Image 1 (cartoon, rainbow, N blue to C red):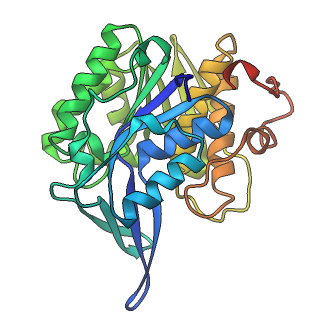
Image 2 (image 1 turned 30 degrees about the vertical axis):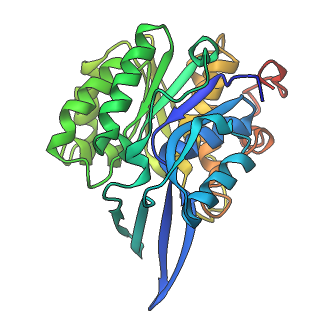
Length: 313
């Protein structure tokens, strides 16, 4: 594989251990930033996930899934360390904890990338728990600042988790200041700002970087997009929900795809494409990235976008 990706997501890939009953567990591959890379690749843009996984059975499954998703394998590192695990011991509402002291993800080497990759990449995405885990967080922040200085577009989805306490505040401010696109949910904002008023928290976040495009999602109630001094709102399409896992990752991945593919479209088209992707992701179990046909099938008839985007293939 000689062609370098146009899109890279940098952060964590992990294994979810899900309790299915007393003494019964199942596992599935996951990780917020890795999921976003898979979404953009499935929609049709050459993509990669930049991160490190273990060399054991968990890492092998992630590496195989990374390849199956069509992601450039040169950006995935396997190191002789323990795996990063998310242990979900209660499913609804979810209660979880992470197992990953000195795990493989923390040993990602940001210098081990294909030569001249920054000349090809157009967009790099950050977020998830990778930005709350040192020393990985420091490596990723430095990478984001380097990319920004070189003219690469940056997107950021904090994807709040309980590990993002007061110590995360400085990282939040730095990433918001760097980002060209920010995606947050109302639940993210309540956790990040430790408050009960997500709209007030969103106003505070926007004030940190008024020039950023912001996707503000509200679950089944749809989402809002704020860009270039304008705002749009879209309701979520009605679908038969199988699983909401990965819906947020699908929405930000689809927004980035839309911005890269159809830059001349207005914010309403970009927003509706993102919302349709989030809904499409809910129609399959697990974090299953929707394809382009599935997303377009949920767009209103008034929204017309090209069916094929061959310039990215």
